[in-house]
Length: 548
Ligand code: F6P
Image (cartoon, rainbow, N blue to C red):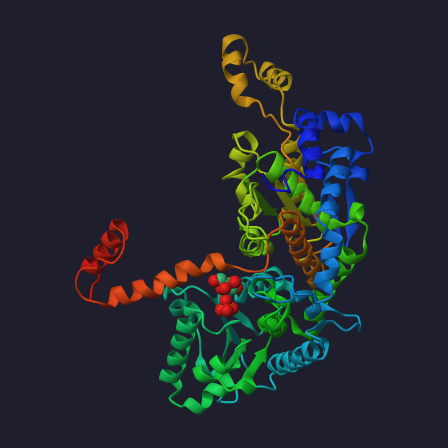
């Protein structure tokens, strides 16, 4: 048994779970008219209602005991102070420095990193100003119309998610494209639409060794040269974002056209760094600063607010409550803004690459569940697909509902219908529909007797299914910044409670290693025999059937 599952705070929660698991939220709402006021709060322009959870005041107090026991407040201080809390890579975790808007120094190995952070930011802003104004032009003197971000994982998901979410704020002349997969289908279909004279490529890779990105970057470079025929023009049309200047230079991009960041920025936390160049170009200096400002506001809240009023902490402990005590294996993110459609995919990497671990900080295998499967899509479409399972299926799936109140440019009745569904769903998940209500409805419809008895069990909704609601006035850069930072800190708190390192990602390495070896096998004629029977069989099937 691990020390966590034997700890006083954990044991108290396990005991308390026995009292709470049988309670229905319907009754909790009826018993306490103040429940909504008690279990809701606002920060960074985000209103957070967590009253539709299977909690009482005692639950929250015990969960916060767990947070204290895990040393979360001390660890927050360590992160903000630049301590090397990513112990397996011996690195600080300082995405918060990239949006640090006060003048306080943040030091790593005795060096205040803020001057270099601000210098790169200024370089990004100057570059984006020039692209947006048309002052910086392509090799034939035309203004840029198309920006192609080539990157994968954190070098893609942040920029693509933010540019989609904030398209109302984007520059009208600029079309943003994102190439991530090595399946050439994506880059080929994007390149078909582009004019090399007016296209800027951003090659975004922290390591600048990622196979998918380098392959796509080479394809883009070749496409450009095939049309332009002059290597000298590459400088105007290709820029790099990386921590690896040597690899950038080897690839053929002048390091003057490189925007730097540092090893203390994790890939999935990098949209605040130069990886956000595509965002800065699209939104412009002012709105990009606003995005940072929103995150900064959430950072300050996280650092300074007492645990009882601390939004990321509360979001985190609710997750722990369901994962570790109710046995929830997944968590749904359900945004009702279509523009946030990529937000669940963004959170998938943030959460699953961070907390998808089974070994604790001391190298011991854990005996409790850690990060859940995070999934989701635009909520309203989900209602007509997987919500059936959420309402009546056998697994408990906690859900985060996210929406904005104002939807400028969207004509009525769209917004009202959208929001009616948004509120209806959280109500339905909480209340359910009991037998008496089902029978009353069937009586009204004239279905009685045996026919009614047969239908009743199918039409009952147990309810008591937990949801969080996050509402904001309008989805602006500032609100989005706060929203992203909220989830980053949630992941941090959960990782701290589970005593795991949320900042490495060794789990992605094995597949990469094996792919290299298999790539060589695929180039070697004849039967492949060096793997297990299944892998050999599949490789040989592929080799037999590949047109060469
Ligand atoms: O393979 C996973 C990963 O390392 C992510 O953590 C990262 O965001 C992504 O690949 C891309 O890496 P890079 O920016 O170095 O190309």
